[in-house]
Length: 150
Image 1: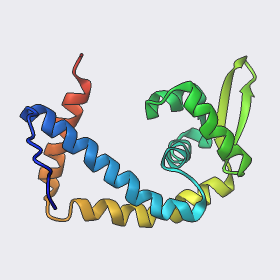
Image 2: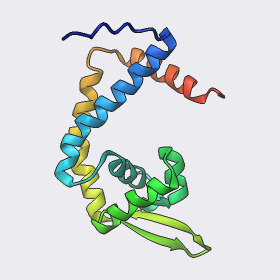
Image 3: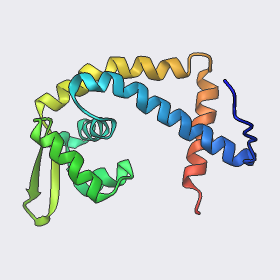
Image 4: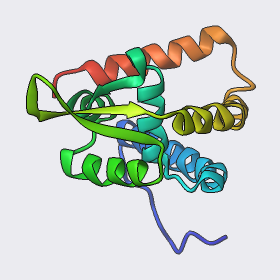
């Protein structure tokens, strides 16, 4: 395939970041193939995963926003669709009407469980060639970069 005369003028730092973005996009695309079976999107699945691992299967919308790094506006649409399809329940906090709780339903838990094996297979395929030590090193570097003050 021809590159049309393209010359990459990015610094090594930018090329590393772009490789991370491309890898994340590829993972999301591959995930979409098996998530489609449950009629959910990648962000919807991530909400379900957060709730599935939260105490009592519930968390505040604000905490889920923070964990997933998405805006409140996007979270509203995502959770409305999940609620409509019976994967979660949304409810007001008794102590503050402005605070919304999200709770995973049995249908949501089952979807996470069913999807888990396929997801793990896809994830494992990315790292088959790497030792646990190498993966831990990559993770440490990425966490360090993420925790830097910009």
